[in-house]
Length: 341
Image (cartoon, rainbow, N blue to C red; front, side, top):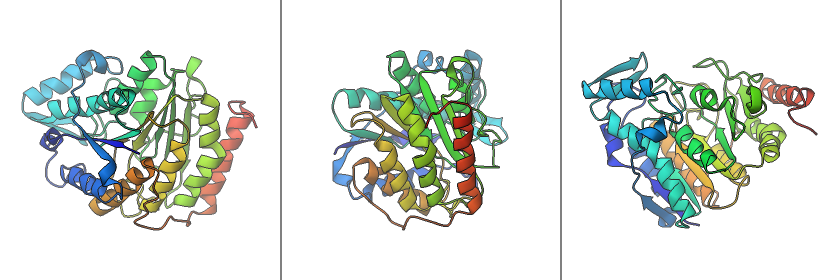
């Protein structure tokens, strides 16, 4: 299987300052991971094109877009307490938002079977009107909205340790896009409780799986089996986008989950079964321990290519509270008739 690998040197020009977790070195760790994936010969380099403003406007208000551009044009600064822009951030952010669009066109042209977009800044915390959580624009939402406009049904599965509040915000009432998040609870940004399921025509197209600290791979695999795959199957997606945050790794410095790189292999492989080849897209989100990021990237890309690459063994150390939470979520979806047996 051929895998598109989309990245750009301009991502290195998004400078966040000394000791900021979302630093340029992350990109080097991801590239190293791609080379250690066991399928490096199957990777097809892809140069992203920048997203256009009208494509950003599908998911962000114009005042937010203009505010980011103005901050960058003035040399950069803080967009919120955690989110920094520099003089290179506008171009990096446009290229990050455009990577998925470029990959979709290449997949539809038959150039590969799946795509991995190694981008920064990340995107899943950016709401319609606000940059936050290291994110300027919602990279995943930009490509998902493009696919939805083309008549596709898009499933976004986000396994970043932090809830993707921005992605949820953008699609909360949109029946064309299913948003699924498995994340640590409690943790920044404080959203993503399991009763948040969408509103209006979008009710039932948001699924949150909040898991307690130290949850590991067995809880995630159980969640996929018991609730995530059934909900996705009911939705019948034609495209899959994975928001691949690797900060759920047990060595990550800003979270408290218990996953290993081997778990990310299993999660990616299971999710790929939701849609056919040629309609699978992975977008990098978080992950702040460089060795964990390297190994987890290798595992994820290997799974995209249909190969089991496990730099570390999968984990089976979750508490009973994690399993009980999955059962509680499943009961809620059955009792509200959002899911049938």
